[in-house]
Amino acid sequence: MLCAAPALPANDADLARLLKGIEQRYNNAKSLQVSFNETYSVGGRERPSESGMLTLRKPGRMRWDYQNPPGKLFLSDGKQVYLYTPQDKKVERMKLKETDDYRAPLAFLLGKLDFSREFQDFHWKPAGADYDLTAKARSQNLPYDSMEMVVTPDYRIKKLVVTGQDGSLLTFLFDAERVNPRVDDTIFRFHMPEGAKFADEEGE
Image (cartoon, rainbow, N blue to C red):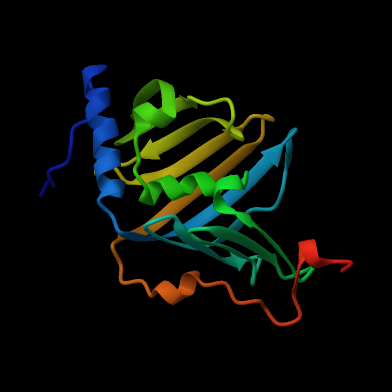
């Protein structure tokens, strides 16, 4: 039996339907959980891939629990951002609105996603049963220059590629997405790992 699904866009008029479908899926979500695989390259040099579980909750709260490398944590409580790297037992922290970390733009998945406000120069093409969508950032004051999404017929983002102003590429592959899972707000509270210290307190 065939499941009903939105048809692939056939012309530019349907681009608006594609964008609206993505916006409605994520703007209507209050929480989201998805597994991720992350790769980063700059200047032709690629670092080892990393993977784990991402949990998001409105407004602006997110938690990246890394399984590879084990123990790494990137967390936002909606105001502050914390990055813990267990190999050096350091915690970097800054205000969410000031961070240039490429994971921060993913907060838009649980914010007010508005493609026309954030991006321009849209292009799309069929990618098998999916959509391949590219766009440029409207503002030059952001750390990223453009993005590419691979989106399923039910408007789920399964791949996101962020191109930085420096030519770097940050690629996320998403799987096993759960919309509106029950999430305990306490997971977005940062607790200092044993033996760790804030990087900005070194030497004090």
